[in-house]
Length: 364
Ligand SMILES: Cc1cc2nc3c(=O)[nH]c(=O)nc-3n(C[C@H](O)[C@H](O)[C@H](O)COP(=O)(O)O)c2cc1C
Image (cartoon, rainbow, N blue to C red):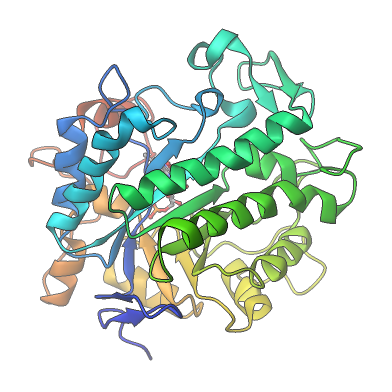
């Protein structure tokens, strides 16, 4: 079996020092002007010494895409210094820095977007129970361009790549999902048309990469495999999306789920482990990052059996920032937060975890 502590080479030749990456995690901890705070920079640096790459918290590409209070911004050139500071913090420990780029769509809190104008694929329900408005075709094109512009900023700020956030019910997923996309134009209706906006974002990000960077700039895509709603995304839909994405010049795909052991819920084929199903569809064309509830070395060994080339750790790296180094040294790791320890976690993130008991093991 592959040793996940050994280097991994992408098809573009870029090498990660090992096969573990830090999962993107929103920290709610930017300064009031949406620049990255010192607490956030310290948090990234602390976790940059072991993993092969750190995928940052998502940053929004346009003002009406802001989805969290305290989210560091990436939507104008005014934020270049801030973006650069995050990349530099991650590089201190030798990890590759990948900026996650996104638009919150209907999930954006109304008070965070200009004029309270929450947008989505169709007229639909917003996170506050109010209305989200369908984007016009011109606005869709503007957002596609904005993904490209934030990619350019990532290149100029020294990142090693970007991850297009097509998961977790945000705008790209809202377009792909039949639950939120009721459009009847070229961006909705059939599964093919629901893929159109995400694929245009992929194409634009790659166009900008060609213009401002070279092959070594990593472009990944994150997707959520299933939605619970009747009209929502099934694993059969996702299989088609993944098959389509695997034909694009992408460096990796990244599944988003809370447990790597999750079994397919709505799928025509045998209901087995989702990562295994996705791996079969990809059929070696592009590497896949697996994720979800990897805490102990035993969990990691079990997750490797899914065949995912790379494994992302989120919550465990909050608990044990030096997890990879400790595993490599054969040391014990803790799998519940030790609240008596200096954890180097931004205080807004710690407060958020404390107000959501059970979210991260051991947080009191
Ligand atoms: C505090 C927190 C913030 C998160 N923020 C993001 C995010 O910005 N982007 C994203 O794609 N996923 C986000 N996630 C999901 C994680 O990337 C990951 O998929 C999930 O936590 C499961 O992995 P884990 O069990 O190793 O934590 C977040 C998760 C947590 C716990």
